[in-house]
Image (cartoon, rainbow, N blue to C red; front, side):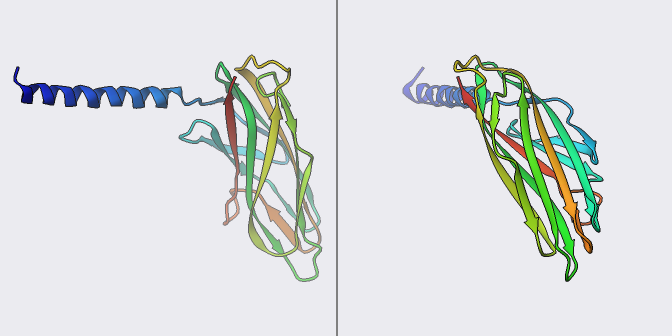
Length: 197
């Protein structure tokens, strides 16, 4: 083998080595396995889409709206399976939808609260939140939820259940949609930030 052949062989083995390292780094990126999300009360989960990062879940809602003084509740439950050696540190939830408010109307509101169960999820630290809308518009509201480990020790991994309680309130002459049936479709997007134990 001459020096030139050795150089080519070294280059190929270096490229293969770098590819193996890149694959290992990608394989080490944690992802969450999501079970079927369930909507009850005044909404239904029409579809759910898992993001390419393995930590984002989009819930497309059907029939979650309130018209002309109505009040509608939606209870969402999302089953999660956290990889071994990791805990959830934070959860971000983005709500999208539209409001239509006539002149003289008091507007609409979207209320939400959170609950976690299962050691893998720990305990949610987030006060109930309310957003009031006084004009017609498309909206995007994001909540940040800090998660505390259920115990002082981090065992990591396992099953948990995220609960989201939503209430859409309208006044006379107004409506609010977080709903794919509307022309300006909306959805709920969740992002889970994992932390290694």
